[in-house]
Length: 256
Image 1 (cartoon, rainbow, N blue to C red):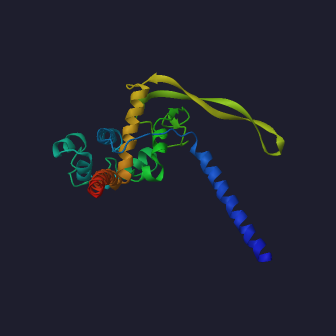
Image 2: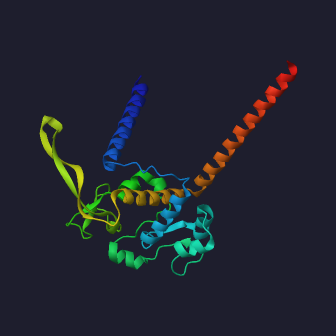
Image 3: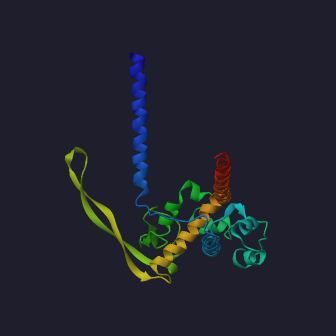
């Protein structure tokens, strides 16, 4: 009996810890928008690759990806690859390395910008999509901006000229704290535009979606091939099914 109670207690404790961690994680995430990216959209992937090379590769590398693999998977010829994706002295068989040195990163950001090869797998495409849309002006920060999803982020808003500048507006809400006491907390309400960017909100959403789509592909390049093979297999099975159905009708016609 004691052993049973002990095991039950352990299970209850473990369950409570799991639930607590889930609640904590949910609280950290904040509001998440859906990326709704289309991995099979080759044009979107090409635009996303262009966006990454123009705005991200200065600080962030893709150490598990080679340029020639991008060329093969995204349907780019060698001239298009060199014109749109390869800058500097990199060759087609080189990995996608960042332009910034470690010394520069430490001097400017006090940290190494992360490699983004697996970010879409670890964070999720919706997280990246939301992160790139939720920078707001914060004069208390050295960079002049903060991020709603990742407060205190050391990354500057490198896309501000495209998106424009916005201010986070908060509202006060009264909640019941432990012990039955009430307290007011500040809750995010909406973003107030301060300065328009070169893109409209819809165009900026598309820009971010393409970029996220590219990072989704980078996180697992074989997923794109698996989807294509899957469609081919489904097409084959449909054709085979129709052929077998026609063959069945032909056999039964001779019997009758």
